[in-house]
Image (tube, rainbow, N blue to C red; front, side):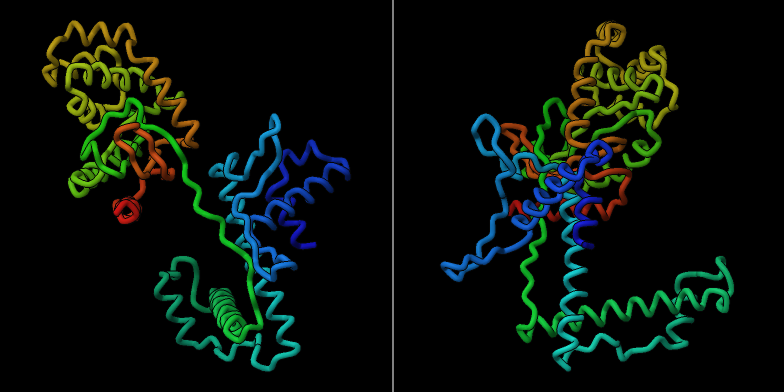
Length: 361
């Protein structure tokens, strides 16, 4: 019953429209069948072997099979992972309760108790003075520590059950989902023939995009020989004149001055009228001011900006800054990787980049 509840809440699509008991029944049946085939090894009686299908057929379209991977996206991956985690927790609890009744080696009551030192340590290390006195918070801290001790104890007992052969789990964690895309018209810095690329989708009027530039420059400095760094536009609709700023950078790029304009747009004032943008072009000593002015006035690169916005949305980027990090084929421009969101700290980018570099070896 609990499994059905989780399944329905997590995976039933447009549930408000599916009120009939027949539709509900078939939804649950299909979902349970799908995820049993995704997460479980299924015994085959005839061969006494275990079979696992990581990519089951969902249905047929025009007579051709459609597999789970054909329609999988970031959202489905997140939901799959959420279901896996819930099932894993429930399986641990269920198996231990069953075994405790029969096997003395399984004991669900932890021997470790919360000490006064533990309570004081948590209170002081987490600077909880601002939230209340120790006496006021002591019951909450105790409850937190007792829960931690119990969880760790159950995991230890579960390990014992597995080692003794009393528990066999057929649950399989969903395979990592990789988004596919292309750099297209991205402006590239770093090693343009690298096997790893980090593409930034940003808005020149976004304060967080301004903030992240220091981190990006540091990444280019430290990984520029191994990684390609791309920049594409994602001006948000509520940022006035952000489109014009993006177009101006492409007009400057046309004359080999993208990076100079890029730097000024992020370091200058937020309000940038067309007149302001023309002054910036002169400040970077653009080769032909007339060409630049015509380019900006005629919105020559409006189509490029719109394409960047469309591609960002298809990748699942909903805000700025957004990043597409992955394996890069410089000949085709194709990228296979993951989406990173927000002005993340340097170390977060560093760890993610190093993971892809290691996989490329």
